Structure formats: structure tokens, C-alpha cells
Amino acid sequence: MAQPTAYRYVFHDAVPITEAEATLHLAILAAQSLFGEARVRMDASYSIDEERRVCVVDASNDVGRCVCRIFTGYLTREFGESAFRVRLAAQPDKVATEVPA
Image (cartoon, rainbow, N blue to C red; front, side, top):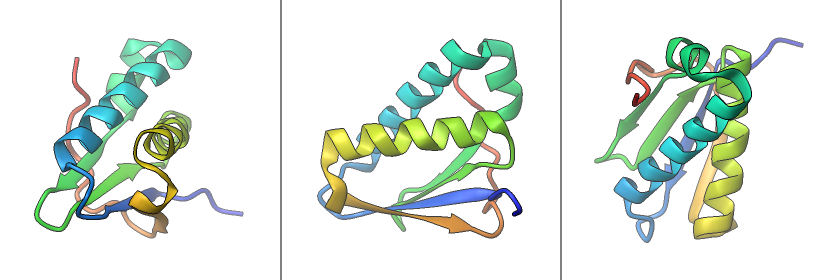
């Protein structure tokens, strides 16, 4: 079975998109504890479309899949299960945002 290449998160209007992105940064920080800062900086990427309330996280490697798992858990805990949807995305939509140092 092929590994997913990206996950698309769609947020309901009640979720401040800036807070969702801050939560993603926490997930990335957690992944650094597992993989090390250098590997996460090289392998993790994402994009956010604030207008469409969408975040796409690259899941084409172990680091990205780990970030997605952590991010999903954090979002569920912080905003609730009904505050967002997450689905596999066939292609990362310009997943190019650099991971914050």
C-alpha cells in the first residue's frame, strides 16, 4: 500500500487559523524531539491558505507522517473533533513553507 503524500486539514470558522498554525508549530517541535532538529528542518513542510481555512502537511516521509499524527491529536484536544476535517490529499498543494527554526 502506497504511503500518503499529504494530509489536508480544513478548519471550521470557529477555529482561529493563526491558532491552528501555532498548534502545527508545536507538533513540529514535538517531532524534533523524535527525529532531531536537522532532519525535521529538512523533511517537514506545509502550506496554509488562510482564506480557504486549509492547511496541507506533507506526509511523504516519516517526519511528515509523525507531524500529522501529533498535529491531529493536538487539534482534537485543543479545538474538539468537530472543529476540523482531515483527509488524505493525493498531491501536496505547494507544500513549501519552511519549518520554523
